[in-house]
Image 1: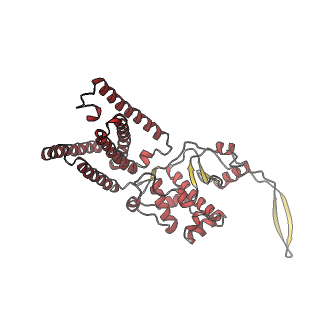
Image 2: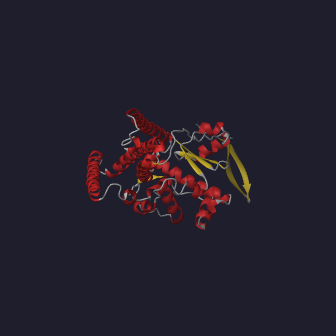
Image 3: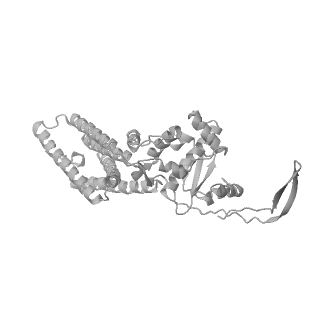
Length: 385
């Protein structure tokens, strides 16, 4: 209140009103801009990284409170500090509300989000009520301005520690990028997928931390790419595309590797399933690992068994197990939905085996015996895209 002029004889009602309007207006703009910014992100990170953003929102809220408490110390910068703290609280409102919805959806195992939300709101109300009584008791016991920063730091550390424990207690069973990285890292070494409990205990909960696909296979994986854009950019030729449609004719996806940009583009058919996306991602990881090993890059640090496996895959001396079987072997995980970054482009392709008509029979002599060999007409195989 001192930051907006309360107790200052030189302050006018107009100045206090303008300061308050600027503070609230900045918060509204910050809320809109943050929601728009995160809406532009492909993988809806507020859902996919709800743990990280839940903890980040708590930290940001405590930081905003710290700025508000410091306003009386630097009155010359009161308006910018109040605007900044309000903007931070606006981001906390967006991120906190979005992550709360994602966590509530996970906790509503009986599809009873309304009941879970009501109980969550009641619990929050009870905590705020206890905090109010605690604040009154502290104000009644201590003198004015006694140990304000010590008390603030104590309760802030307690708040962050409690929220850290709460986020760690979450055991989500759907895949986001971080959890899938941990599963693939373990599976590619031992061919055994870890349980959701063990993965959630290792999942990073700090923003911009954790493994990426480039750390494991040396390539970035782009899901849901456009074939037309890749052809226009000359990243793939028509003959290579014909081969890919034949090679992936039994799958609902195909891979295109770009060694210059260190990216693997995964194109999906229409009406692909969540399992198809996980299979495509898994095979893209193998493809990238094999390509990196052939180039003697980061993936060569993997065990020799994985190196031989991936290298054989690249030279087509080894047949990869059915991706659907691999995904189904990940017991305890929900593969019916995921939170991976998938763009909206989809393709259509079909490989039709052309009709082969015998032109005649030719007698061929081998080791004093004759064998009948059918001479086939020349075939021009083309895919239907």
